[in-house]
Image 1 (cartoon, rainbow, N blue to C red):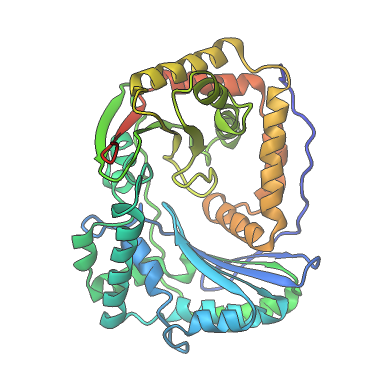
Image 2: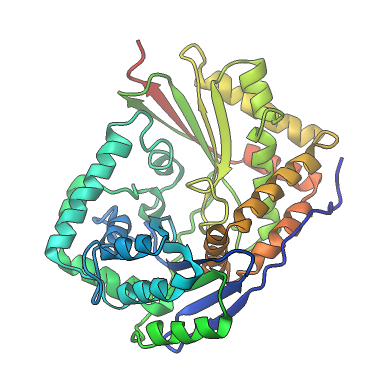
Amino acid sequence: MNTTAISLPAPSYRVEKTSLANGLRVVLAPDHTAPVVAVAVHYDVGFRSEPEGRTGFAHLFEHLMFQGSENVGKAEHPKYVQAAGGMFNGSTHPDHTDYYELLPSGALERALFLEADRMRAPRITRENLDNQIAVVQEEIRVNVMNRPYGGFPWITLPPVAFDTFPNAHNGYGDFHELAAASLDDAEDFFDKYYAPGNAVLTVVGDFDVENALAMIGRYFGEIPVRAVPVRPSFAEPVRADERRSVLTDPLAPRPALAVGYRVPDPALDLPTFLAYDVLTHVLSAGDASRLERRLVQKDRSVIGVSTYLGTFGDPFDQRDPLLLTFEARHPAESTPETILAAVDEEFDRLTTDGLERGELARVQSRIVAGLLREADDALGRALGMATFELHRGRPELINELPGLVGAVTSDEVRAAAAALRAQGRAVLELRAGAAS
C-alpha cells in the first residue's frame, strides 16, 4: 500500500498578479509556445448568490452580457471575436460566472476592449431582457423539460441534499420567476455583483507583460470603483440521517439513481479534500475502478456509473458546501436498495482493506495526466488559474496540484471512504416514465 508521496510531473507556468485601483484583480501567464492568447473574466457571483424569487437570474444575466455594451452593438461581440479567428463563450456556476475568448495573439487588445466595455456598461434594456428571458426559457425546454434525464441530478439532487435556498434551489430557473424579472432587478444585479472589485481578469498565452498591462490599464483602469458585496457563507451542517426522494421522468427509458455525500471544505483543508477527489477516481474512473468492476462488470446491476466532485464534475470550480455525487442508470430489474447495498459494501471494503497494490499510483497518474492536459491548452489554463484566484487567492495552484495529488496517501483515501459511509447521504431515485 502507498503511504508516501509519489513523484509525478508538474508544470511550472509563469504566473504574475496585480490589482488595479478600482479593485480588479489581474492574473497574467505569458507563454510563447503558440501564437494564441486566452482572455477570461470571472465575476464572483453564481446561482447560489441569486435572491429568492429570482431563480435562474445569474444565468439570465450571463445572457444579458452578450447583448451589447456602450460601444459594441447587439450581436457585435461575437462578430468581432470570430472575425479575428477566435472563439468565445460564457458560463454560470454555483459560485462564479465567467466570460472568455481564445484568439490569435495579435487580437489581444480587441478581447480586452470588448470585456472592459461590457464590464463598464452593458446594454440593460427592457427589449434585451425580454428576449433573453425567452432564450433561457427555451434552453430549459430543450435541456431539461424535453430531454430524458434533463437536469438530473444537478438540479434535482440539491433539494434532497440541502435545506437552504442558496444550496437547494434550481439554478436554471423557474419559468414564472424568470418572466417576472424586472429592469430594476437586472440593474441592481449588475451594480451589486459586476463591480471590477468583484472580478478577476486572466490573460494567458503569447503576449508581452508590459504591453498587456498598459492595455489593461487603458481599458479597465477607468471603470469606476464600486462597492463589493460581502461574500456570504452558504454553510450547512452535515446530516447524520439519510434523506430520500423519488421523482418520475416521463421521458426516461430506464431508471436512475443519484446519491450525494458531503465533503470537506477545500478552502480550509485542500489536502484532505484531494483525498476525496482521488476516491472518486478509485470508485469509477476507467474499467479497473471499483464500482465499474462491481456494479457494471460483475453484478450487472447498472448500465453505467460515475462519481464526481462538484455540481458539474469539476472539483475546483466552487466553494463549500459541495457534494461527492454517485450517479448510475440501471435496468428496471435492479432496485435502488440492491445498488446502494453494493456501494456500501465497496466503501466498507475500502475502509477495512485499503487500496490494492499499485491502485493509488495508477489513479494519481490518471488524475495528474488530466490536469496537465487541461493546463496545456491556453484557454484551459486561463479558466483554471482564474478559478484558483477567485476561490482560493492562489492561481499558482495550477502548478502545485500535481504534487498535492501525488502526496495523497492510501490511509487518507481510506479515511475519506469511512467518512462518507458514516454520514447521512441524500438519495434520489428516478423512475422511468417512458419504460415500455
